Length: 188
Image (tube, rainbow, N blue to C red):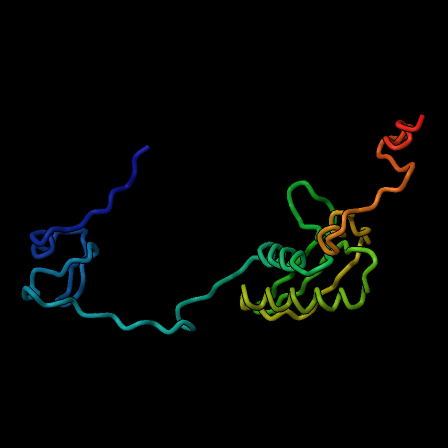
C-alpha cells in the first residue's frame, strides 16, 4: 500500500505553467504556505479575514453523545445511585436522547437512594441535566422524562462518612450465619 504524497510546486514549475497544476495568481499563497516568487522580499503575504462563526458551517452532535452527557450529568446529582446507560451489552430503553436541530428530548432511567423525596429528586435531576447538556452542547433541552427504576437503601459506608461514627455491632450479630460472636466465645 502506498501513501499519497502531496506535491508542492517549485517556483520554476509555478512560473512555467506546468500542465495539470493550478496556476497561481499574483498575491496568493501557495499550498506550501510560502510566498510566490513575485512578492518582494521582506513583505508578508496578505491576511485573510476571519469568517464569522455562523457562516462557517454546521456542527452536528449525535443523539448517542447527548445521551451519554445526560447520563453522566444525572449521576452527578446527590443521592442518585445508578443511571442506566446505553452500551453494547445493555438491552432496553435506559438513557435515550432525540436531537432535532437545536432541540434535545431526553429519557433517563435512574436508581435513587432510599429514603428520598422522589419528586424533588426528579426536579433536581431535570434542572442539573438540562443545565449540563445546554452548557456542553449548546442544545436547548425541551423535555426530560425520568423513570425511577429503583430505590436503593443507603449503605453503611455512606453513614460512616456522613456522621463520622462507626456502625454499632450488637451482641449476636455476625456476618457469617451460624458463627458465634467473639464476646460469647470467651464466656463459654
